[in-house]
Length: 382
Image (cartoon, rainbow, N blue to C red; front, side):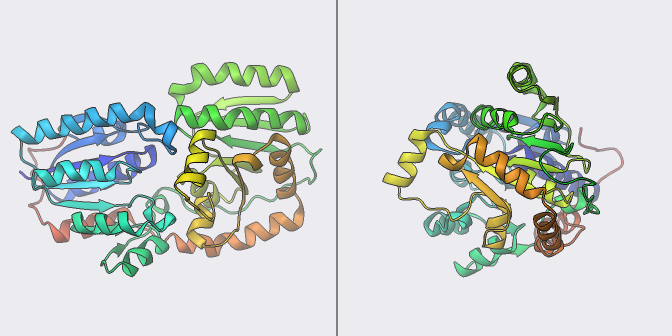
């Protein structure tokens, strides 16, 4: 039976990779080895380690996970010294995609890249060319990502975003009342990594003192972080008298507006037709190094704006991310003209994400290039 390795470095890519692994296993006999999260582990015969949330954005932020990632690379190297792999698929592993690729190349394992790192956002052509050289196939989920790799001379494949299989675009729910004094429901999605939550959530909670006490706030973070996030929320409720609840579920269409960290959750909110403000901030030292020494320049931080190539949703980053600016941005979204403008643009944006079904298309592309026999009745992945 062929043995394939799947690697993912994000919670969102853990879910996407899991869906693709499951679909492939339904049509072919494959033994899965994984470096990922709990969703991927459900379909694996061997789990080499947990990589979800290890990587971080920013030089200072990444220091905490660097040692762990080095250990995972050593574990993979040791495994490959005694086991063979027929193929490796790397799903969306920001910053560390290349480290795992080097280990795989050393052992002559063919590599597919599904959902590339953010080189296309930064226009990092050098890293993009490196990825092209070690990837036998590049499967993209964004049209701009696809076009960028084409411009480098590659032959990528565009399939669309797997979220389209999981979330059917919702019908917009127009608020019954307008203005900042009306009772509104706001969602706060400060990310999934601990350092991201610690950097973004305090500003969001301080913002609540500038909003009407009639607003109800839902804070959404992974359940394993609830023990240390809840005390932060309790203090905010005491200070501002606001109604705040903590959740770990996906966004609900009952939200009127949302504040969301950069990343996939912003797309999920858009599919639910919820107006958003995208926020992001690096450690001050990371920001200084990125802008003053590395001279990095990103026109936008929000994935929706990066996909379109122009500013569409409101962004607040670094020094612009203040409680007062955030409160003003949310109140502006809850005016009839702005709400209508955002909603009118949603269908066009959603079309940029592709067309469902995506997971089956992606699985078919992988299997067409590397066909294996169908699953037997007596042999199933556990």
